[in-house]
Image (cartoon, rainbow, N blue to C red; front, side, top):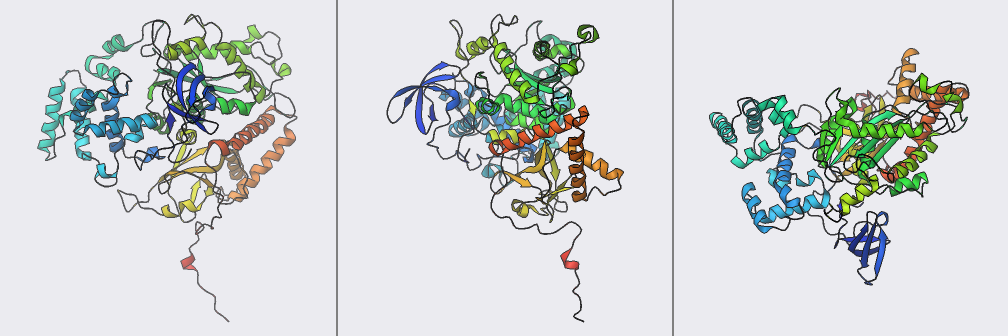
Length: 634
């Protein structure tokens, strides 16, 4: 995707699209994966697969000079608050019924204290990208880089008054809260915020949370708890999606020796309205933030390229789109800053299920149970317990490899989507189609927009580390990384605390730590930062940790990355020799194989290291060239 390309495009009647180098106008939606279109030049009418179409080639100039990739976690909180206010303000216009209402636009403009043109600009920018960051204030609106419209002190007064004055059992009115906030600001010598600003802040508070604080948990449960056998707000496709992990009940074998390597983990995402499996991620690694992020990005993005890679051309997976609500349990991997900020950027409302209350995740639990039940018919199934297993030798009968299991799951879901589901009284595929295209009595919501910023989306849902940039580059887990793109950021001071060094965020894939992904503020895009020592082999974070432990046991400094990676290579050789004898060695070897396969796809999915010749790093840690004393001639 080029810098000027839209981050998403709409699939609806009258939209302009492209396919095979030609531009078309959609004349009708034929099905969830087919559209009728008219060639703009020849006027010929054709039937196109949605998987073969993209945004129009005639790319218009971006609406602002900031409609580019952003480092999400690098944006100040007060600017995110402004973007959220604008998102709340234009929400009525996002409805297709109201988006051309001039009267409503004038009304919203008056509330915000801006012109109607500004309201329509915000609306166009958000509809073009689908990203909350498109509504961030630009430099002119901030009055200077990093400055907000209202001061941090006023923000603190507003937040404290809402938490400790409004959201209490005294049930104070909005008018009383506005008066109290403005009174406190006046007493402190601060400019009181506008009434509409305070109202918008109050609107952002979650309804369930506010009722619980003001009227107690029982009242909140009565008002917001789901009715038995149903979930509110899941009335159309993508309204609510649930995500969870499970250990599959089937033993798989390695690619080389065809011997047992135990079981694989799967992360699944289910659309609550239609019960379709929206996305999945299969792995030999235990659940983590990475597997959660991979599943979410897989759910949002189209699946055609992924199916072609795996070589499954028979099955179709015509489901994609950004969800409204993301429902997860309280596992650690779901509670990190990365996931929260990424969901905020893509306008996803993240809900965490209450602890020890699995009924709140009944749909995803049932889907995982359906998958587990289907796997019981395979050789190598572990069953549910000793009574069900009997004398069956699961390890001895195991015969399916990791890649074969992945293909089997794709075919399984292809059947599942076409089989009648008792909860919705029809196949999930039909329910999805009905929700998008409508039926005889109820209109559909329309096809979801297709995102074109897959590279940036995957990075945003990837774990990160924060580090300063030094003369020698960046060090994470005692491994050095460097590229010339880091030069302008060496020893960069903190923008608010000049005596401190600024920390930058470096995203990385735990399966391949040979590359970091860094947001370059100059080019305004993510760049790949490789090992400083390019002779080091690609490795996973788990291999590196094992090698560092071995180094400690042998008395080798973990900062000696050459020695640590030498131990890593030695471990690989030992695992290869032991693979025919032990399951753990075969599993480690197979994990490396799967990580290597994922590494091969990075050239298509993520930024690659620049091919231009890079000059060497400026210095080595601990080496000061100014302290060198020249030798005497004699």
